[in-house]
Image (cartoon, rainbow, N blue to C red; front, side, top):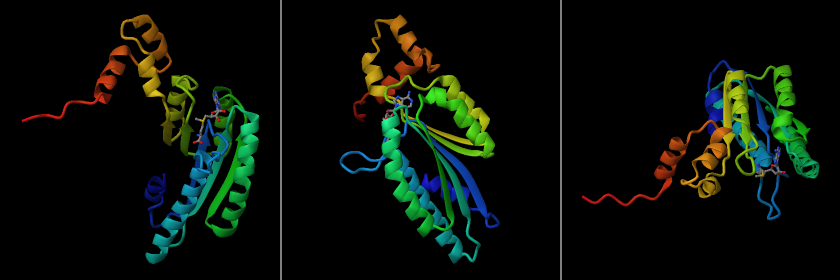
Length: 211
Ligand SMILES: C[S@@+](CC[C@H](N)C(=O)[O-])C[C@H]1O[C@@H](n2cnc3c(N)ncnc32)[C@H](O)[C@@H]1O
C-alpha cells in the first residue's frame, strides 16, 4: 500500500491526495500476542507513506502533499469494534501530533458487511472519494457477494479490493465427484467448476522439469 500511495502522489504540482480505506472485516486491531491487525497496519502504512513521499519531495524542492484519508472500520461484532476503537484512538492522537501532512478520520460501524455496504457507499459519496481501497478479509468464503465486488469496481474511478478467500478449505471441501455441490459452492463467486479445477491444478506442486 505504501508503494501504491508513493506512485499516486508523484505529480510535482500535486498538493493533496484524498482516499478512503474500508476495512469491512476489521477485527480488534491487535492480536493477543501484540501483533498488529489490518486497521493498525493501514494506519502505520499511511504514516510511513506520507513521511516517505514528503521527504522525497523536500529533496526535490517540491511542496508537500497533504494526504487526507477516511478510514471506515466495520466488524459485525460490537465488542470487537469497541476493542478496535481502544487500540486505534492513541495511535490517531500520535499521528495528528507527529504527522502534520497526514489527516485521518475514522468511522466505526458494527454490522454484517453486506448490510453495512449501502451505508459505506453513502459515506464515500458524501466525501466524494474517487480513490478507494476495500479490505475484505472475511472468515471463510461466503460473506461478500460477487455483485458487491462488481459494484465497488464500477462505482469509483480508482478502486482496489483486497479479497481474502479461504481457497485451501474450499478446495478440500469441493468433491470432484459431486458436481452439484461444487456448483452451489461456487455460484456466489461467479466461478465455474472448470475454472476452479484449473486453478487447483496450477496450485498443485509440479514435478521439477527434467531435461
Ligand atoms: C479474519 S478476521 C479479520 C482480521 C483482520 N482483518 C486483521 O487483519 O486483523 C474476521 C473478522 O470479521 C468479523 N466478521 C465475521 N463475519 C462478518 C460479517 N459478515 N461482516 C462483518 N464482519 C464479520 C469477525 O468478527 C472477525 O473479527
